[in-house]
Length: 290
Image (cartoon, rainbow, N blue to C red; front, side, top):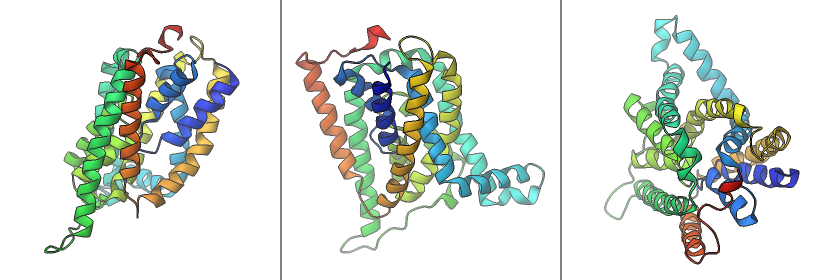
């Protein structure tokens, strides 16, 4: 991998990690369209450490408060009813599905799941799911001619059951094209949470999963055509760009619909199917050289 490739892929990772359009799919597609080798699951996992560092800094006050309360709850029984302490446990509970499934399906994630036809399918299907979830949320918020708006849930109402459902939604993002934020936010909206609450828990939930995945993949970073230098460079780029994107996205979702992302996902998926069907792109473009 050249330094230019690592710069572009780091930029793509930072731009797409927090948006509900799938960073892993866009890394895969960028390489395919440019005629580069597939950067692979290890490169993707490690560059995601950069974007998660952006989450740690952006949500630093929340994270310090949650971690502090969680540790105190281990010895102080009165702290166990504290919302921040409970959030600590719920992040742990919600991280279990992706941890188990990530190890179980590691070979599939690094192989068959990277087929461009599967990515096109997940882009379209999850785009439609996000669109439905977004419309339901908008309907609740706006109400109607003969009904008042329905109040949606906040994170103070999050329990173990919903935390696990969020976790299984996040685990779906092991398949490129699904999108970690897209799947968890869609799940949250369908469960009746506000856009802000679903997005906030989605980002907090991603921290242990992404950091663990990145550390797990460190051993493979220097294998094949991807070397340590370009990987670290891409990770730094992803951090800087990712921080700017998360700050923008958290403001965007408080007043805007997810429909632009839904339309983009569906159009990109259809385009990908057309290009593969026409023979312009091979469904396994770049894989053989990894």
